[in-house]
Length: 549
Image: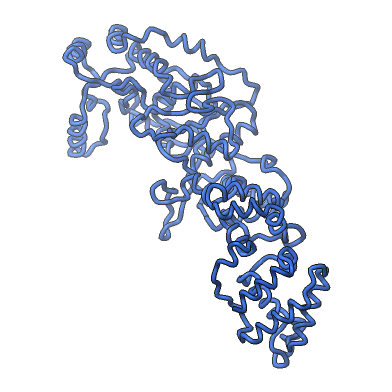
């Protein structure tokens, strides 16, 4: 009977499951090696949480040896977005999370266990659906949306669990004659799993992060093949992970509730159940409560956000390492010059409850990452960003390459390295006042802090330009400022002023502040000596004149 039913429902499927079992033989893995995967749907932008889970898959595979592959789960054609696959591939490339197998672009792939796009595997899924029908483990369902809605209302009135199960599974026990009649009359149908589960029984599974988990068995007769001939996510995932020989399914813990169904599918198909590792989501605090980082509410949920802001890839990765293993932060402090790959990452050290996203912390990590870069690296990466997002800045950086690198090199070595750049979009604020093309076309409100008298400011600047010599070493340069301060009634040292404030107008720092602000319009800048040296006396003079106007 079941063989007749299978041929009636899927007459075009001619292959047997043994064909695919032979085609996709178990991988030749060494002891302890693993097979993991990233299986995104091209239905929107790449979420930070997806990048996080993918990175963990890649690290886990690198640590244990084996294969990490990319599978595109594109069976939901209604929700698929234009260039969705391209966006996924670009994100993986940008973050250097490169799969060993899978899609290379929209039309190409590598590896012997493909196709790696689910839309190209239709025949495979249908073969296994037909196999389940032949075994009496699946059946056609002719219920429409209205039927299911009525069923839901009936169950709510009865105050029982909603769903398509047991006696509520209306099409479960149709005879083959009834099925034939419905098909001949043109009724559309889907294929459902005939679940042997009992909700009152429990299954237990050990999760790689969450430990021992217990669930009721699945008793829902879920859809496994849609009316368009494509499988549902749950069914396709089981077939693909088996035939691609996935050993460890590392995924977001929004899938934890699917474990009973997934284990049931593997068991009913005669497959070995993979090991599950469910990663807790990245959380965000809102009004004292925690919630998942949201695609709809949070711009920082999109991986593209970090590119647009100019937060370096390395900084995002190091921040995600911090979220994954809390001991990474101390390791990085102790190993400033080591590559991130040398960190000993451990799955069992991951939090089961979810890490809290902290934008301030991310920028702090980013400042440290950029502080470790050479001026040439900062220039190159900053220029790449500016060419996409700030044309004016890119033009000036390009035109004044050596000058810009010299500016970026100020305070880049020594005990106290500058940390004024957290993202490439900060470069405009850091650099623009040093480009005459911008500086002389802007109006500034010069705030000199403690010295406010215009004549006093003019006198300081006039006398300073007369004594400035671009060839002075730093000690000579600062001694000249001290001497100027003293001659004008200011203390040579800050401590002298603090000891006897009534004897002085102020201190040398106040005089230096006048020079800094007149030169740059800013009260906070990198080393003043280096800025002056890079500008040269003629440009310094012009800037002082602008300030005095």
